[in-house]
Amino acid sequence: MNITQDRLKILEIMSRLSIDRASRALSKSLRTGARISLSKVFVADLSETTEKMNEDQREMISVMVDFKGNEGCRLLFMLPLEGSLILTDLFLRQRIGTSKECDVFTESAVQELGNILASHISNALVSDFNAKLIPQPPRVHNDYAGVIFSNLVLEQGMVNDSILLIETIFEISGSKLECYLFLVPEMKSFAKLLDSIGVGT
Image (cartoon, rainbow, N blue to C red; front, side, top):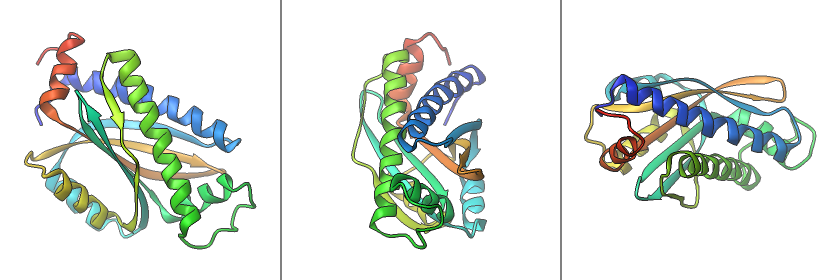
């Protein structure tokens, strides 16, 4: 993945706009102070990232969304199991701590989170950067970080030795949870998007 510093700055602006909008929508939907904030955007070495994911022994709930259009890409958001249980209780308007294990309600809550993230990422790119992105139905998985990330790599058929990594903090019900957000663009079409907004190679 060949991304210059100028392009990386644009990607960070895109990501921050998208995440800020998704965060506001999530907080409004949950009627609480839930917040997703961007920590940093950088191009990470694929093998090092895979090793980091394998070292993370937390059980994760993830949502994966494919985007179709002129600028196709795939999004993967992972949050720890405890965060998904809090999210479930908030969506169901019940006392925090009621949900004890991942079930159909947890999957529905995380799927809705995926819908919120995907719709606002696509809306930001469409309205602000003239992209054409259509999010597909989210897919929810419950597994360890390394397994989920390996599925992303295998499904994407990644041949590059690097990946765009967006570090985020998920603040919900007074708890800060470190989450992973991966955005894997189809680089040829994404390069055309950056060219169209005047960001050279």
